[in-house]
Structures are given as structure tokens and as C-alpha cells.
Length: 218
Length: 218
Image (cartoon, rainbow over all chains, first blue to last red; front, side, top):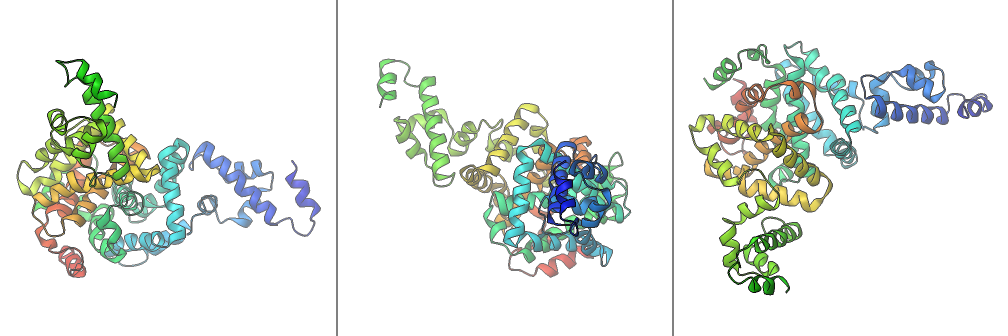
């Protein structure tokens, strides 16, 4: 109730930093309480006591607002655009490259590690992370590739990337710390490619997984 | 100084539960302070104020003692034995299966998740975990398979398994939570197989990684 009069008093600056900060505060509260999926821009506007149009003025949708509340160094839609922009048979390589480009920059690595740490300790943070990864990052990539079982494929790709981040930046497993990003990208790209886009996989869950394995053992 | 006289006083029970507990206490202190690699059974015996022979009486070597201090539900040498016992071309499948067999049992899953949580929050715990994984688990498997670059291969396989544990048990990514262990094993086995034992990989680090990728794209 105090914020709105404050903004009104500034007259020509209703769209000032105070309003943006109030929206971010409200978004943090909303995402933390309800997770990513159940949060709405309308509810966040109500909590911040601003007109919903102002939320759209400052943020280009829910994923952008979420990225800002988490101080993510990249907009998810732009990251996904980079990964999907190019030959389909190199999507695994582009995905790995895009992540290591972010992670190897110290400031953004610190943000990602902090988010992982938080998810490991707090169920609220874990829910936000898993719903965001499913909806806006790995899940979105799999959906855009129009493969069967996008959820499972997204989970496998996410597991590979989260595991690499854990081993290289958190646990500090020597060979993965010493290797260059290019070396790791080259080694994991075929894995991500298979998980996300391999047409031989067919239906993953409930399908003939043993047949799938043997086709790879040939 | 108090433990030894206590044991002596018991006369016929120098090898009692007190001694075993004292060794475990000392081992926890030693592993936490120096990490896995730099800890020695001799130093642990000194810290526990017992004869080194008693350490060997209760524990079959450093990896067994470490597993006991961490309340691991399995002895590392037995786990590795299970993974290596069988056709080389199915080592990835056996590795995945052995881990999910452990992790899907609630008590042992809780231990593993606690160890992961601890490693994420404390550098001492991270060091113990990475050195133990390198020396006694993933690194040992890669060394036994006599492949080039065992360290990097161990790191990639560990990253895949740690990432799966994170996504299925900690972050709770839906499709990986709902899937059966068998389904996940079938999907990740080819990845682990390639990381650990694929003869086409040749030298991994510093070698022609682009050549390696293209050989997989054929």
C-alpha cells in the first residue's frame, strides 16, 4: 500500500526503479511460495501493488522475470534460441557449448552454483529449479525438436549438464576441472545429441528400451 | 589417552566395540582434515591411540574404513567387483544398475543424498568425495578397464551418475522421478559404456577430439 503512493508522488516516473524492484521482490516471494508453474504475472502484479501492464513493461514474460529474480546472467529464451539455431544434428554440441560459455565466466558460474546449492538445501528452491528447467530450458528444447517423450529427454540432458556442473565447479573432480570447455564439449556432445534428438530412440518410456540399447550396440 | 587404559582394563576384550568406535572417530577426523588420499591407516591408529594392527583387524583397508565412516550401505570393492564382473561391452549397464539398486532403497538413498548435500556445502566433504570417487569408485573402474585417460573417463561417468542422482532424488525432475530404474538404466547405459570403455575414443584429452566426434556422427 505504501509503494503505490510513493510512485504516484514521483509523477513523471511511475515506471521508476522502485516499481521494478517492487515487482522483483513480489516475484521472488511468489515463485518461492508457489513454484514456477503456478506463479502468474497477474498475481505478482497484485502482490507488488502495481498494474499488470507495468510488469509487462519491465519484463518480457514470466521466464524473463524469473531469470531476473535469480540474477541469471542470460535470458532463457535467448539461450534456447542459440541452442536451436543451427543444424539439428549439432544441437547437443551447441547446448554443451552454450552452458560452458556461461559457466566458465566466474560471475555467472557463481550464480549457477548458488542456485544448485540452494536447490540442494531447500525444497522451494528445488521446485523452482525443476519447473523452470522443465518449462523454459531443457523441456523447451526437447519440445521444439518435436521428439517423442520430450520430458524424459529433457531430464536426461539436464542430468548430464547438472552432473558436469557439480563435478567441475562444486565437487571439483580434477580431470574435469583441468580440461578445457572445448574438450568437455566434444566428449559430451554425442551424449546430449542422443538424449535430445536421436531419431532411433523412438518412444523412450514404456517402449522397447532393450531394442533401443541393442540398436546402439550394433 | 583415556581410551587405551580403558581397553586395557577390560583385559580379554581389547578388540571391543569401544576400540572400533574410537578408530571410526579418529578416521572421521583424519579424512575430514586431510581428505581421502592423504589419510593413512597408521595416522588414524595413532589418533585413536590403538595399535595399527587393530585397524586392520576391524577394517579391510582404507576404502572399507572410509565407507564405514560415511555409513555407506555397500563396500566399494564389492560394488566395483559387481560392475567389472561380466562382459566388457555391458560394463555401462552394470554400473548404472548397481547404483540404482542402491539408490532406490530408501535408507541407502538417504545416505547418498546426505553425502551429496554435505559436499555441496563443505569443501572438506567435497574433497573427501572427489578423492574417494577418483581412487576407489569411478577411477578404479576406468583403471581396471585399462583405457586411455582413465581420469577423464571416470569424471564423465561420475558426472552422469551424480547428475541423475541430483535430478531424480534431490531436484525431483518429474520424468526422472516417475521412470523405473530399469528404464533409466537402459537409456544411460550406452552413455556410460562410451565414456568408460569405448575403444574408438582413443586418447581423450589433448587428442583429436573433433575426429572423435565425427567418428560418432558417421
